[in-house]
Amino acid sequence: MILRLGGHLSFYAPQKASELELEIPARIPLAEVLQRLHVPADEVALVVINGEQVELKDAYISDQDRVQLFPPIGGGNGSDRISLDGA
Image (cartoon, rainbow, N blue to C red; front, side):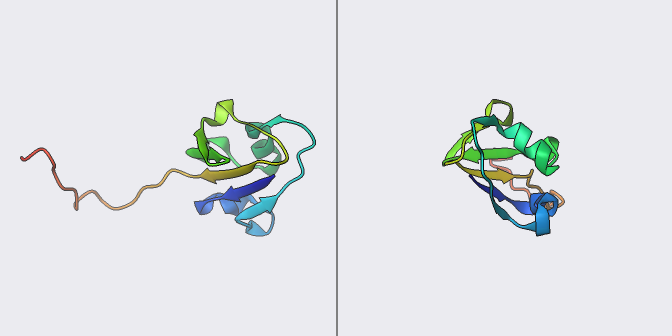
């Protein structure tokens, strides 16, 4: 299984790698893999498995899967917001 850790999530990986290749002997909940890697599940905002977005709580993976994880994305102070309602 190929696991890509986006943003700061790579901080939790061995050698802070953004991509890991893991052997998964049987279908397993993704949350269990994250627990073994010490990646906090509450820091994962987006899960994509084989190009399809899924909920972490519903995600099961196997050895041939490609998994991408992304943290919440934010930034700015809000002062550059543009109103689209005409006001």
